Length: 181
Image (cartoon, rainbow, N blue to C red; front, side, top):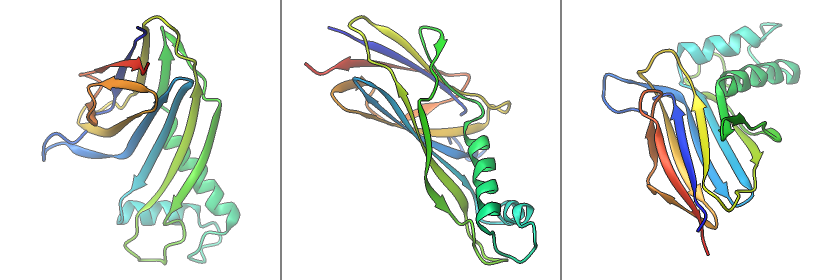
């Protein structure tokens, strides 16, 4: 029976009131042909969201034009993905595709208490072989108190444990992924 071990090292998930919520959540979708990530990156309503919009409002009219909005989306994409890595047996997998599938709050009115965010879809093709395979997901942040929520989904594979993941760089999560026969 073939099995895949997924070791996920992600920046920490909210374990206590003293830890901070990371602005990123990741849905990991596994299927026999590869890995798809949905990365949700959100800047909470308030000063940081207003400043981010303002930084990209080149003409200071209070609204982001198409070019300004695309520049902000590129910046949010960079923040969401710059430290995110997937490797198989120690070799990093390149993302075959990356697309923005949702945008939130780009043109909120000035002074509005609106979140700002994006959702990305990233595909890593990898036909899982017949033998056990070590897979590692990393998303590093220098402060171990930042937590990233990770939800796990599988199609034609079973995953153990089956619950949403609580991971950080200090406590990797190991998953056993087995094809359904």
